[in-house]
Structure formats: structure tokens, C-alpha cells
Image 1: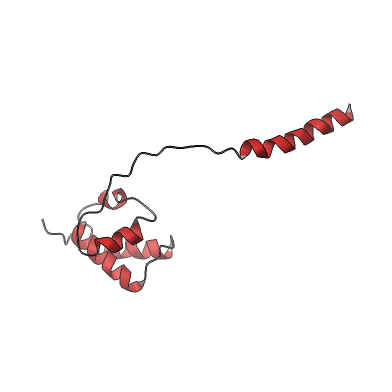
Image 2: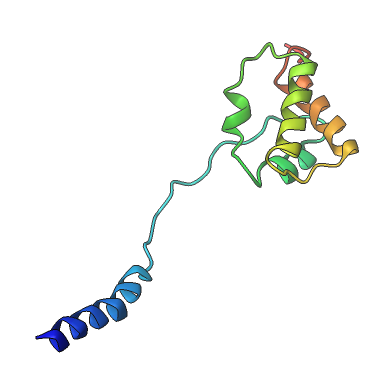
Length: 106
């Protein structure tokens, strides 16, 4: 009887990883959000879209000042590791403030 339980355990160890390795297919809806046109849009698309959609920015309050956008860009760089140079950070803050923040033209 001991050999049977050993065999069942070994069979489970052999089959378990194979069953877990099966891939699961997930169909996501197409991305349809886009950043608003503005100066430095190409940089924004290159730096920001690698981590999150444009919806993330468009859902922020429309009266955010430059200091808040700067803090957000710094957080993305330092906390989340976004590939943003100091020069790029200034350009991103400029875009965000003038396109989504309290310095935008109405």
C-alpha cells in the first residue's frame, strides 16, 4: 500500500506543474484614450504610456497647479522607476500643467 501512495504523490508532482503551466488567454478591450494635443506630446506618449493609459491623467482635477504636476512626475520617476531625465521631467510638467492643469488655455 505504501508504494501506491508514493506513486500517487509522484504522479501529482509530475502533472501539477504541467497543469499550472497552461496559458490563459485574456482579451482586453482596445485602448481608445489619448493624451490631448500640446507641446511635447511625443515625449509624453513615450514616457507616460509605457506605464499607464492617458485616462490616468485625464481623470485628475483640472485645476492642479504646476507644483502638483511636478510632484507627480517626480513620484513616477523616483517611486515607480519611470525613465525620465531631469530635462524630460521639466518638459512633462510643462505639458501637463498647460494641457491638463490650471495653466491651460480655455
